[in-house]
Length: 285
Image 1 (tube, helix red, strand yellow):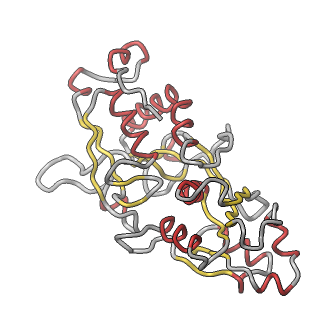
Image 2: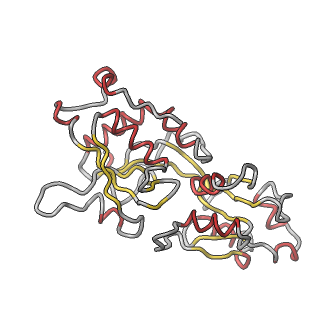
Image 3: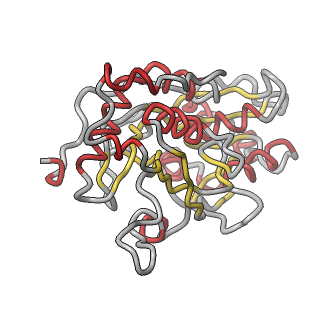
């Protein structure tokens, strides 16, 4: 998909820039994981890379990355990390965080997705069209389930509610592996028959689908219920106090929302309407 990039001359008309001309010459510095498909890669093939490129081009700024693995301490070591002996930070923007993320100031959301049940076809589970059917299977079929579950997220809680926790095969959401992220490992294990299905976040499911021939999987969106939420909005993050940059990003989101959604959809990611009412936080006042 071609991303429109020659719109710098239109910036004055659409009001994307604030401040002086020198502001346009700044770098658009993004904090990202170098091996985290479908979000970001060092080769800049992830959908977050595409959105960052779109924004940098429209601002007339050089796109610069500070690469750091998406692990515990990511924000501390990227967005909040100062360059020694300067008053500058290693990077200024994180392209994808949950809306209302606690460790940074977030923009308005730019997409909304959901967890899904992803089932490999041709393994004896092609009759499953709703996740609730798994709990209704005869005991013998239930015992044959090989379903991946993560140490974090609502999937494991759902399995426990359905009485299927014993059929779950545990995976870590942060692997610590410098050659595979969680989505890459799940993709390999699904194709090799280690697991037959998985409950996982929509963007990760989209990545797995994109790595296999068409129609290799059944994707079943999970429905949020009281006490168990599966759908979430995603936003961008800046440092607390960096209000001008937040406002600038929100203008970019507003002016490019259709193109942003098209980029995300091209990665086979299930998209839901962005809720009008987002959780309110005191620091957003």
